[in-house]
Length: 363
Image 1 (cartoon, helix red, strand yellow):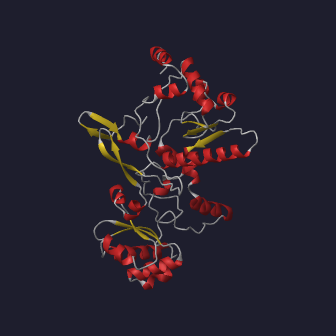
Image 2: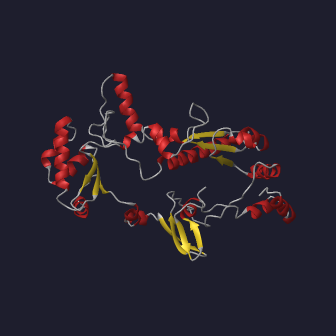
Image 3: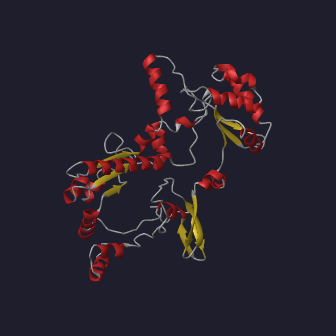
């Protein structure tokens, strides 16, 4: 679905989706019209050799196509099928349409982006902020990867090497990303009183974002007392050391004092000062600033690739660092169906078979 979405890398009349380049590298692409019997047979041949089948259809689509887990496990008992959907395989929303904003809205993540005057308060007037990334899409994929790896590991431990079905909901995944909020809420509900918040949702002097003189921002996460004390030292506000956990109007005064102090210097000046203090202060950067960050560069999170037509293009590096078998980008993202013939030949289909498949619109 990302293969023809903008923005594009361009050279003369040639163009390629940047989304596709980032998301589909190191993969091969085959097109199959699964509404035809011949295409299903080819798919079943692939399943015989596969470890995992993954889909992102709504529930029952795989059943209608005849490629659901029950069918595939009869062909290959070791197969692991993972279905990642917006809401999961059961429940009242399972057939509802949705996108990232819907899943984070239902799970509570979107509400957590509000600027909180009082941590844990639900009666807020400030509207939620739509994140500039896709927490449910990316987070759901990570949970799916963990689920698949768990199923693969379990398969290797059981004598029959049976596979299983992995049901992943993007709403579940983002809901699971809120342990601090959950702990605060659960304590409050059990005791009938407001729980003590960690400040993880913002709105606390020691956990929030502050503007600097040059209209940039610093992220402060001085949760532990030792970090709070170091923050106060660096700001020249030693008198605030005992006011980390103040509430109500006093808390607002402390936040105001910190904000006024941060406005006296630029972001770069404050970062230079806090190099000498062991506390949790960092720059709030946009994506391009992050690309130039020495930590990002040191971790090889930006890599350059030589495209046969476009020339040098940038891509994201792997966040997983393996000592013996480091991850590499072995190939560019394929065009849709680019490897169809190659894959069919690997299944021992002849050139004559392939031409018949094309004629019958199987591929």
